[in-house]
Image 1 (cartoon, rainbow, N blue to C red):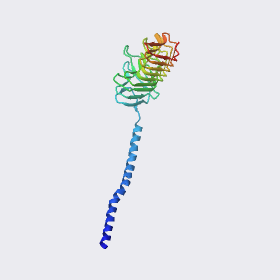
Image 2 (cartoon, rainbow, N blue to C red; image 1 turned 60 degrees about the vertical axis):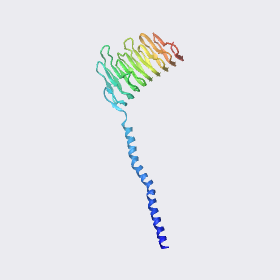
Image 3 (spheres, rainbow, N blue to C red; image 1 turned 90 degrees about the horizontal axis):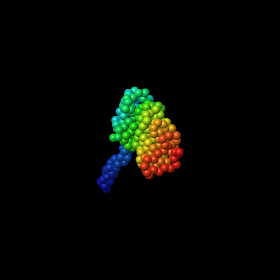
Image 4 (tube, rainbow, N blue to C red; image 1 turned 45 degrees about the horizontal axis):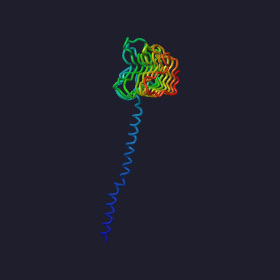
Length: 263
């Protein structure tokens, strides 16, 4: 009986030794999570604090990402571009600042405030003013967004905004431009823009677009067209008045022409 009781005590002791590490495992796991959690939170905060890359001068943007102006920019060269974009998926927020060009540029070689070639895609430009350039924004690639800009006032412009994608909520006036210039040239969703006192054509919109809620007035020069749209496109709720060459002109067949004010 003595040996049997001793064996039982040994078995209980061994069982306790086996169970004890298992019981400690949740505690160790919790401690590990506590140690790692602050670092993970710090990394997330670091990413939030990085924010957009600041722009303080004219330059070439060759890396994707978000950028913002932190001051007004002045472009003094007689030719060339202030901000040249060579990367895809770049967002530039003018943050209420102005990119300006003092008078003077090489004949036949217009200056450009912001430009991206047809080999780029996904460019966004928003929220600021551009004045004095031959072209304000010239985005040749697709999937672009141009919104909340004021372009012109005054300039020797040949074009205010050129883009394929979404063009909305912009104000463009290039009254001192040469004949043949266009305030806004766009294909895609073109909405809520105001083009006034432009030369030749206020807005020219490509085929397959949705053109809604724009206002085009007082185009001057030749041919003096207000809103020129290639069909088929959806043309709805636009206002075009006081454009001597024609307030609303639809080229081709298949346009939905609805609720437009264009006497």
